[in-house]
Amino acid sequence: MPTQGLTRVDFPVLPQHVGIIMDGNGRWAKKHRLAIAFGHRAGTENLREIIRHTDDLKIAALSLYAFSTENWRRSTDEVAALMQLILDFFASEIDELDEKNVRITILGDKDGLPKKQRDTLLEAEARTGKNTGLRLNIAINYGGRAEIVRAAKALAEEARDGRLDPAAIDEEAFAQRLYTTGQPDVDLLIRTSGEMRLSNFLLWQCAYAEFIFPEKLWPDFTVADYDQALTEFAGRARRFGGR
Ligand code: FPP
Image (tube, rainbow, N blue to C red; front, side, top):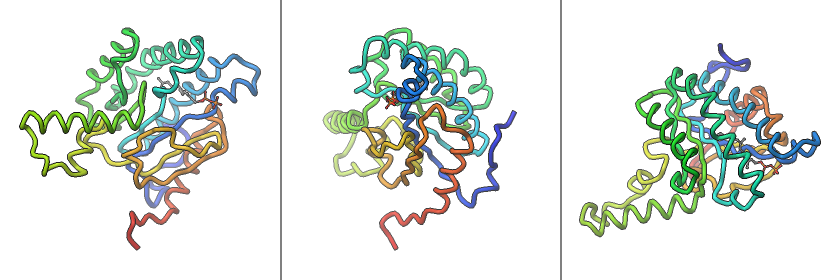
């Protein structure tokens, strides 16, 4: 069933790649006098419609910041709740996503995750790896600087082993060693809850992104709010450094 909301023809232009920093789950829980885990759960519920709508609009790629390398600093309870949500999300969504031809890519260091989570993520990537529809990137145990260092290391190793001529290293070669290899750059970055920071998310890929910072907390962010951000994006003049 298509989601409520605008359709592709309603937009003069749409981004090819949307990034979302789903911020405000903690404040939402506090506002509703609930434990923080409920905020993250409400945020995950919300996510379903946003993914569906992105797919309906035939946007090529959607990247979601689910868990940063800095999030390990949160309480044991909160980390455990987020780890459980990762399992729950894939258990409940994988069939529909695969059916819709969505290809899932995990951005981040899966080796640093508990085995259950790692296995679930590897399985989701393997199962959907040949799909040709929406590229759904979920950043888990992810940091933008670490991703750039990892790419630099890969290039250095290839050069050391004689598989790569250092003179051939250009932006394209670098981008190919990032988790998002083969995907377009982020055109639109949305961060909810009024915070205006990138927080180490997709540093390379956001070089020319438009930024939109809706005030709403992530669990309250609706498909209509998403459409509003997409409409605002369509009204922005993008020059990529030119005139
Ligand atoms: C930021 O809100 C949100 C997070 C750190 C986690 C976001 C994760 C989800 C919505 C779960 C998604 C899961 C999957 C598998 C896609 P915050 O807690 O920093 O909010 P606050 O700033 O109000 O405290």
